[in-house]
Length: 398
Image (cartoon, rainbow, N blue to C red; front, side):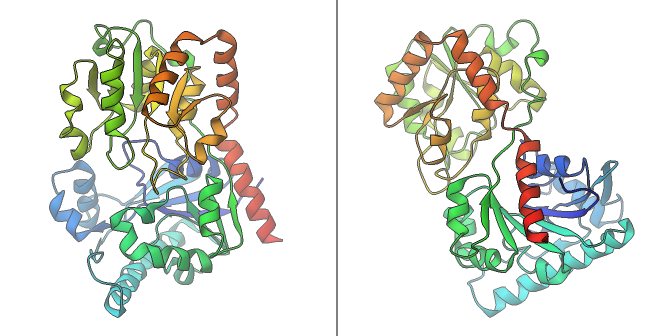
């Protein structure tokens, strides 16, 4: 257990993110025994123009204009900071001296603002926890001079075009100069081990306060009541980068008596897909975090129809723990990380295999299997994950 230390957390996921966030959960757990400053990334110039209508952009502009305080106290030991400047958008620049110069300038402005707040809060001997902020956090170890610098990798981001351009070179270089690397999967820890031999898997947690039977209200949500059973359900962001649209088309075509319910916001690829023309596929839109338990509880089988690609192969899908915590039979695409769940999840290779597993999940479920799923999932707490992080910190502080 680490107690009475000061942590700075920087990362890609802002505090006001609308979906679940590993980094926020870790920050909240750390703050039970330590002081934590959670720093949001600065608003970049392109986003400030392109997305000026969004509430989160308007909030950051209000801070920059001095109309709102950028430092917000979340709880006794936890603060979040919205930086009061606009950072330059430089990702389209080619790698080279100009990109490096402008990126270092962005980092310096970011570090100055963080240092100012550290002084206000009286933070000392800080531990820096960087959640995949490979560009705007590239120089923060040197600029902030923390007692310990930890890089956290939870997605293979460099497989995405935006991050690939500069990240293929910069993420390994960043990992090499940090004291340790931690990850939520063995696969991702192995990805950066050539750059930093001190790369460790610390597991993954799930916020079971949201997925608790005590939160389930009587009856089904209104938009589910008229949908015929059995209901095969998914909750989460519907994005073509991670989910297999062709698989969903196959399942809807070959299991016409099953209703496929998709709960969550859609990206442009999903919005334009043929899935909207299938009579047994239902898009119910985005729901608040507090509502999701009602939907998962109403599903007969839960699915995670992931693509197998560079992004998903090492990704720990927290939604699997959420499904299992509600005792639900679950079918998912087989990959290296999903092997961790093989005793409690139907892992499918190929479309026909997936369809057969849906049949099996519906036909062979038992109360014993349900209770085993619940017990397995509820062992994956953020307290356990952060406990492993503490073990890494203690080892490095010796």
